[in-house]
Length: 287
Ligand SMILES: [Zn+2]
Image (cartoon, rainbow, N blue to C red; front, side, top):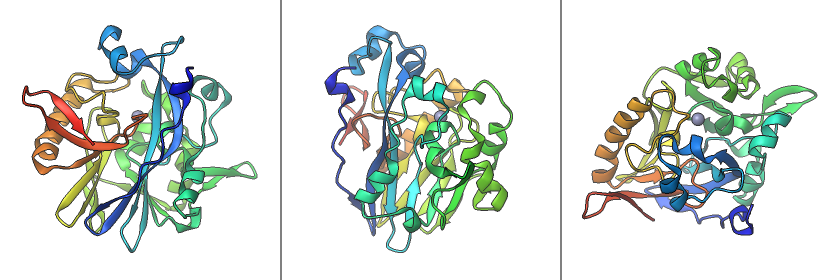
């Protein structure tokens, strides 16, 4: 690893969105195989945007967003957590910095009212639970957690991406009712809603944040970084790559004319930005 690449970018300042305040926080940086991250895109192209290390790995952010609505503190996504099996720690690393990042925002686990997971792969819901006396319990004891019912069912199907699901991140919460399983698009609280965008998994949901006529969207693994804007730069992890392309078209058709702030779940540098079309028709991001 080069020094520059292992360096943590500085935390970005909170931004206002209507009456809400958004903070980009992260569980840290982990490492993904560059080939898997960029799918069929040749390395000569992707390595210009994201250089790989000697093991062909690229740095990726475990990016969460904290939304303060004035009434509720809402945490979108909970990173990789601190319970990864040893083998996965060897492959990906386990930075486990989310609680520290929350503390820097002046919040403890008791202050979180709502947790929303876009889907249940290990790198999106790891801090949902912590182990106490050998048992996984809610990290955020007062929070109501949300995910799609279809995503939770898929986690138990052990399909191609079965290795990415660690049941102790969600099953203990589903059992007690602390995690609510949603069926399709829904408003969670005024201004915060979820919308399903299939492709990465069948039931991955984006989180829409709307206040004062402005919109931000945590689009999660549909567009994981600012290097994945192109319709066809689809991750090899995606279960339904052609649906990823269709979902991206649907997303851009609203996000670009609407001037939405797009949040990137795995960008190691840029947690969010505005996707636009350049004069030549290329998709670009403006911060
Ligand atoms: Zn995923």
